[in-house]
Image (cartoon, rainbow, N blue to C red; front, top):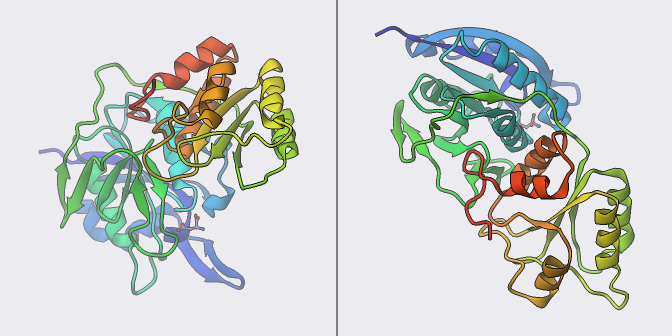
Length: 333
Ligand code: ASP
């Protein structure tokens, strides 16, 4: 059988880092990474491209657009894509790519590592091997492969800052595993409509995590400067009603000015349900805000960026927001 052709896209991160004067910095190119895992050439044929070398702390929506643009340009030439990326914002990039490249039958796989590839003890080599195994498989769509787990790009979150088990799949099962080089797929990810690429994002999306007693002025500030504000509230969701009721008024003003407001929860698992408590249901019933339900905050951020450069018309924003893309939402309404 002919070997699959895979494009490795280097972007930086710990996996490619070396120790500098002030800590780890991305230095190695994607081609240099591959020299540490020569056995991968047994899995597939590989071409390399280095888009940038950044700690993912510095990766922004414009970089997601560059990655998506590169994949678009060479989509027909390759059977799959591996993106080596820093772990810190990998879940955001995975979500971003899930909206920028929809219905891909070819696998687009993000991976990285908690320890640099040059270290004696490192997860880099195994993660790269696993990522290529998935990229050369019949799986499809944007996936994040890490520590043997295969996670939907819209469901990933970094949940450990140091250990190898860095990522979890939130409110959705992992779609498969790679064990000793063998792919075990639990859930099919392919779609039956043609691949579609998008080339724009509205990056003016902000996130406000509530803390007890938070001043409403913080929300006002964000609404003035953003197209959309996501409010990570407590539990299943609700808004504080202090003596003045000012959160309600501030959101109303923001909505009247054409802004989008989404309520979600800061609890990691099981999502929001604004209908349960008065602090949630009163705002949901009275104002045209959106609710994230079981979506991850990373996916909500990226989905809003994707939606708001297409339309700001309220009903259309809501329709697109609640329409499932790449298994990002299961339980709206
Ligand atoms: N700070 C690094 C980054 O996100 C962490 C990592 O890659 O694990 O680029």
